[in-house]
Image (cartoon, rainbow, N blue to C red; front, top):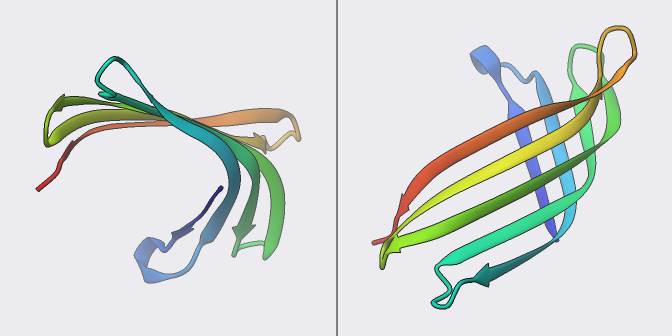
Length: 104
């Protein structure tokens, strides 16, 4: 279970918030456990200050990391959330991130 809230404050003023309520699975793979992965999804509550409305959407994430050394790993994640365009058509907004993590 992962509950995460992301808030937006452009120019120091509250604009919006998105709260994900995800259920998922994580594990390791490989002979030495150097690969870690996860998949999660569930409802997302999205609030916009401009309209003071809260919408219910669906969001999900899938990610993995690979240990390239004892204290260094590389990781990546792909995420998506349902939405509607200005004409009311359903769509999915996609996101991605990648990075390197150093542990001390």
